[in-house]
Length: 159
Image 1 (cartoon, rainbow, N blue to C red):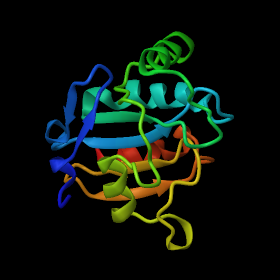
Image 2: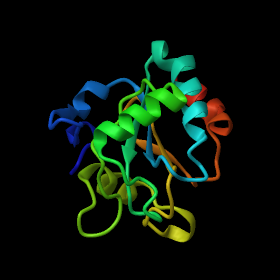
Image 3: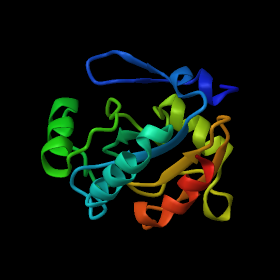
C-alpha cells in the first residue's frame, strides 16, 4: 500500500472503514486489549480523544489477541467492555492480527513506515501507538509504556 489514505480496515459487523475519511486529520492508532496491564490506558485515550476530536483528531483502536491472549472476546464483547468500563467512543475496528502472516493491512503499512526501537518493526505488546499527521505521514511510534498523557503535547503540535 503506497498511501495511508488508501488503507481500509474492517469494522465489527463487516463494514469497511475507509482511511480516505481521515484526510486532513491527526490520527492515533493503537492496538488494544481488554485484559492487559495497560488496559487502563483506555481512559486516557478517551480523554485525549474528547479533548481534541472537535479539532480534527481521531483515535482508532485495533483489538488484538496476539499478546498473552489478552483480548479473548468477540467484537461485540470488546465494544461493550470498552464502552461500559472506560466510556470509549472512538472507533474500534474488528479484532485482527498486528504481527505474523495474517497482519492486517493497516499494521503492515504502519510498521513499514515507522520501525520501533533498534529498527525492529514487530509490535511488541498491546497499546503500542502510532501518530499520523494531517498529511498521512507516520510521525511517531510509542511503546506500550508511553501513556496517553505523555503524547498529548505531540498531538497538540500537529493540530
